[in-house]
Image (cartoon, rainbow, N blue to C red; front, top):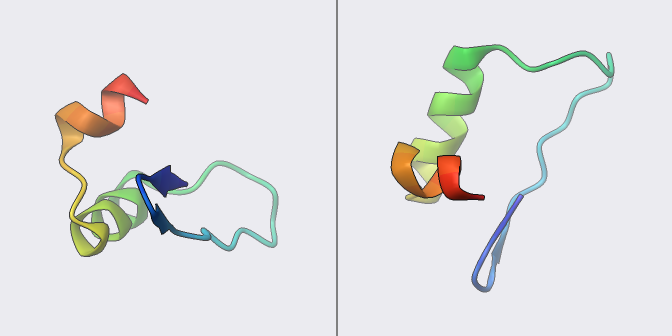
Length: 40
């Protein structure tokens, strides 16, 4: 996942979709709001 100069790797060894709550936590820590995420 990339935002400007910020690059975040989301590990997913199971190759399945990640759970909604994990995605929300990752986005919060990265400072990415839901509206911005939906535009990507």
